Length: 167
Image 1 (cartoon, helix red, strand yellow):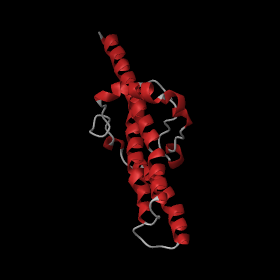
Image 2 (cartoon, rainbow, N blue to C red):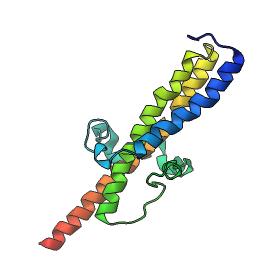
Image 3 (cartoon, helix red, strand yellow):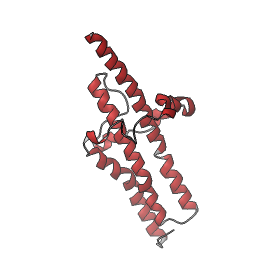
Image 4 (cartoon, one colour):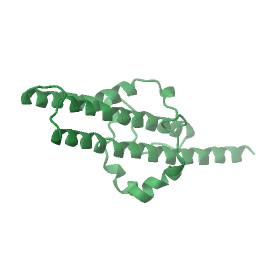
């Protein structure tokens, strides 16, 4: 622990900071313009090793557990990503962009939660908080990436169909 505080203050700080560390980044990002979240940008673009999102299906069996995760965006006035609500290109492109917003929120939540390491006793509490920060966010990041890759394939298919219709 870097800051010496009483046990009561540790509990109070944890009860405030950890939930705020989850909610505040998400709430702030729901207020940002969508053009900030580009699927092709450095953080969000597909990596070769992801194999179009299939790596998550093969190695993590993502389809078995992804529906168990909550979609917190609607709680904060954001875009619902629990299920696909349409098949038109504009909606699917927006959905894909929103997976970038969601992924970034979860990346930011990790260090926000880890600020609790400043006043929690080491090593036990530090280990618990660190594990919690990653376990509560990494699966969500993986789902956002997997969904974005699937949506990218769907967009490519829809654009191909549209181009075939024009010729």
